[in-house]
Length: 246
Ligand SMILES: [Cu+2]
Image (cartoon, rainbow, N blue to C red):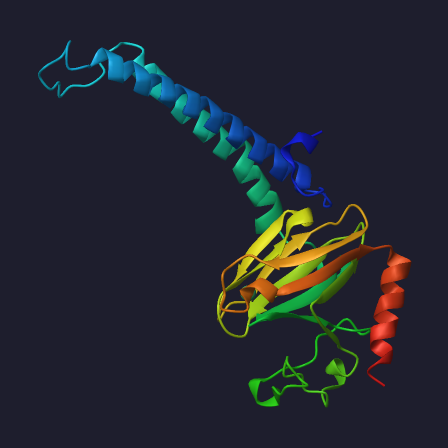
């Protein structure tokens, strides 16, 4: 329906609601732009030097002016209260249950995305800074029984379509931003914080993960791939990744 906007394909359950707010905000901006432009021209003519040689410090005194200002205010409050806040409360305040979701830890670094899956036992293994090394970028303690089956990938995130994906986002160094445009998901990865973000993919496909925050000289190449797959394809992928652990 919104193809004329040129937005990336909407691939998650909440994408339509986000797009709706985006469209409404742009309509409001269009009305304000046309209104302000007309007002600007009106003022240029009305207060031209030939007609008004002395400055007027009172400005517009027309009886309709406060109504117009009130109307703009009402439109903005309406967008906030009836559209933005409901989306926020549905999508940010409440997280889906972990046992019904695909849970992934996403750890950003200059300039890559590390993904961490809990493996078959669905429990994340222990990680600590002292285990960090070039071939262990997440500092996983492989002696921890819960961590033995954990799967890590670099710049590659897969998940099954139709059920929630719960991402816990963090960063090893500077601020990055985790952007999945087709899922209408974007969240800053902030040093010192682990932040959840979730979405429910509604179609299958493969797209780019974009770092949406200028994070250093290699920012431009901080790209990953993410894929929304059928459950069977996802299980096969996970099994293949797990086979590399042996
Ligand atoms: Cu980055």
